[in-house]
Image 1 (cartoon, rainbow, N blue to C red):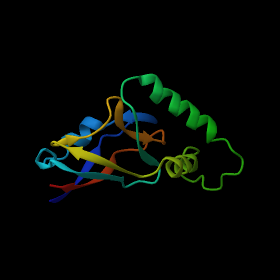
Image 2 (tube, rainbow, N blue to C red):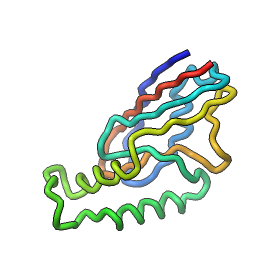
Image 3 (cartoon, helix red, strand yellow):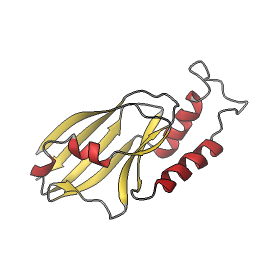
Length: 139
């Protein structure tokens, strides 16, 4: 079977946000899949998707701190600045992390490790609502 949904996420502030439950909740056909794959693709160039720690908020905070330090807004070489000082750094962070994830599905649910969760990595101060295309395939 194949199914595709577009999942819209409410606006969030800059940071790394757990969205695992929202993804699973946006897939009405997920429970029908005994074995398969879920491909997630964010339709934006200033946010990204990642898989990481789902328990400690400190991990998400530390990731945001590291990325903000590594890709600084005040770098003198940015030329793409018409949309604000956080825009070009957001594009760089998105390239580093990536726009897509492919996850296993088993027994009608995401087959993630005990401490794994899906992150929306919001790289703008006010990025707005974000859309994810979720493509599910399997038996």
